[in-house]
Length: 281
Length: 223
Image 1 (cartoon, rainbow over the protein chains, first blue to last red):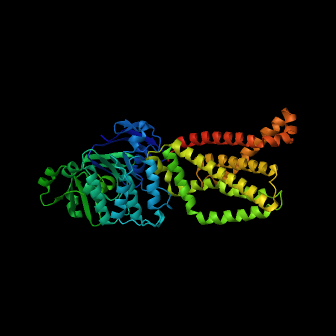
Image 2: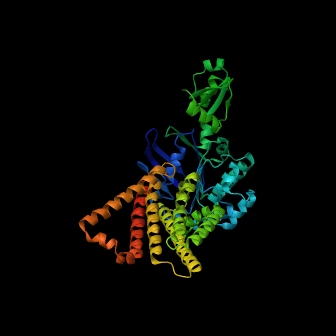
Image 3: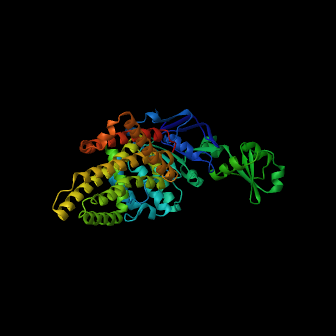
């Protein structure tokens, strides 16, 4: 495992993380989803040792996070949604700083990405568009050849073209079966595309932690009108969505036999998220 | 050490942003020092202003960090909290020390140019005292910023230095009551000879105590 979280607990006045258990195996991308305020960023802060946890144990590369050496930390790349260097710095300034912070900083790789993603060198970070800002953050996270990427909303603000490019970079990153990625995202279609495992958090509790393929095999989604809905009793969750009802079906075979006219669709992560969090039993 | 150099470079790059303002202010101070150099008792005015403005400027780097929420990101890199605190103190010290050297150099040079004489020793002593006062302000402000942040701690950054000055003043007055000869010593010529040494000792004490307090606060802060 590149990252292991065991029984993580953190109590705030109005919010708590409760017994969080997450594993990020080597060679895998783990998508971390949940609505705003569900505990995604707090969990990431705990992993990065930015907050003191009340209970539990977090290990990176099989070492407790409190015992990570500088060499260990050099193998981690991080993108934080709301935090970066001072926004008056430019691409060259950031390169000069990173050279001091990482012994394995790859300047040529950094500029290769800067040129590939067409980031202007004469503008400061604050003059960048939100997409450009995120591109630079991602470039900084991968230009020292890390083994583990911890990404908080890395595709936030990116246009579809760049999201496609960056997701391909992530896929390539884990293709050596040694590297792994733990990424939170609101853009669940990205996770449909790249994630191997999905972890769903709600109100500080893990609701679901499953391989994506298993998740898609296990669950199905049925769309039906109100008349059909009134006659159905075999579903896990239901949600009224515009003029239709969405139903989360767990036992697909029984459902097919009972309601042969209704079609069970392959789920998307967005619809699973909606049904698990907003759905009614 | 490379990390601390990098962190100080980060703060120095912020100074680059204000390059034009600093050059303009510096020229103004040089002119002020030159004008006052004709009046031997006023010569220190420019240097004192220079020290207050540039010496205290390291504090402004905290607001840049706060605006970008940089601390979180920096701690996710191979940087620890202690290195971040050390770099802030080293940067504050170097900024004020370089300003002191520039102030002493320009005061001497311009006094010689204006009056063809060396500046009187008292002027230097006043500059050392002001330098120590600036250190005291810096060393009171930094722990306040670590505790409350730049924005929230604005009021505390004013109150705490006043509080520290009152306490230190009370200690000196108390010592004077216990040791009546202390007052005579402070007002004697002998004391003036020791001002540079006393300034160095006080600077070391202020920085050390303030650094320990900041480390303790920052180590226990959730970001």
